[in-house]
Length: 200
Image (cartoon, rainbow, N blue to C red; front, top):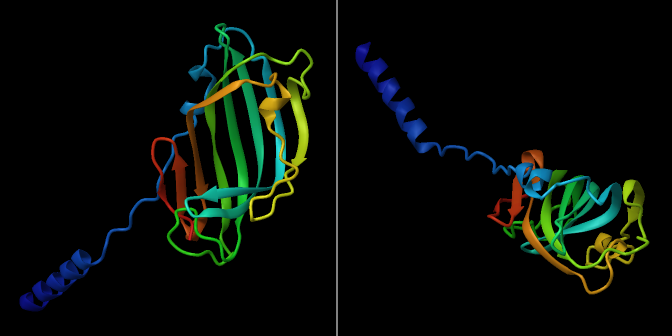
């Protein structure tokens, strides 16, 4: 009886050793990177708006892979030295397109992959604000239909920076990152400080 129990325990131990540990899905702590505290926030932002984007597309390491809709908040602070700190955050959904390569570029997608994404970026913009901006500086701008195709054509795309700045402005990312959660299809992180995972 003792030998039987020992043998059983030995078999269980071998099975556990042979079973690969499930890797934890990648994570992204994007909130602190896209917070107002990253800017010199003396006074109110000169721009603080939200809007919705529909029928846009997203690209990964293998090219365009999904249609996306999202809500975006844009905040802009004057840094007092001829530059502006922009904090832009996203909350949205993605719907993968069959036959396109997965965002991590590991395999083709079957089109059943879908889920949510969130993240954003922080950037420095140098230039002059328009005297009369094309968009309001407060509140909700409305809905913008990018009208994209999976090939990358987006005739309805509107660059938000053009709505507030004179031509000739400078733009540089200080940080960017997004996390995509596809449930059973996995999690993909795409960020300036490292990308990992995939949606498959």
